Image (tube, rainbow, N blue to C red; front, side, top):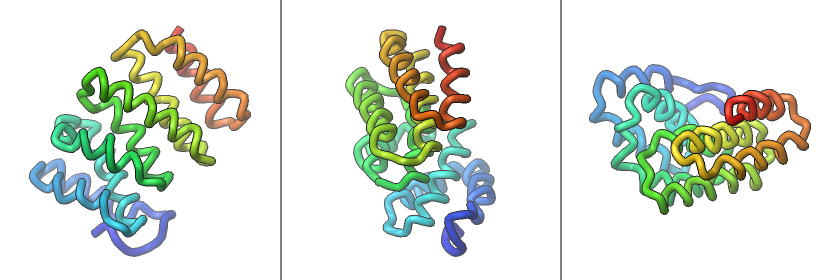
Length: 165
């Protein structure tokens, strides 16, 4: 259901989202699609996982280690921006929290995609609500990103800075 077409389409990922929300036991199958070699399938699986876990973040719990250690190392912008959205939904230990911050900063530094930068910046700000000691560093990082001059980054940055102050 996730294959076919091109990257400009989410294909049947919305249908899959509905199926998984009705039958949570399908989540493992969906998650495993993140680890296949087909970029289109990974992209659509990441989209569906992000949508499912908006309302059911607990489904990520058994996959936290794979997200942080495997999926976060998939160099595909469509996967990266969804991983950035998933990270604040994970129940992180202090060490995993540090790793998550490193992952999000790596996404920002290693991509040309403004979408990845925006979602990573948003997730860093979301992590501040979990660990306020990050606040100063996140504000500094957001200000640095504003120097890029991209409208999407500047718009989100202004909202996040207002929220963080």
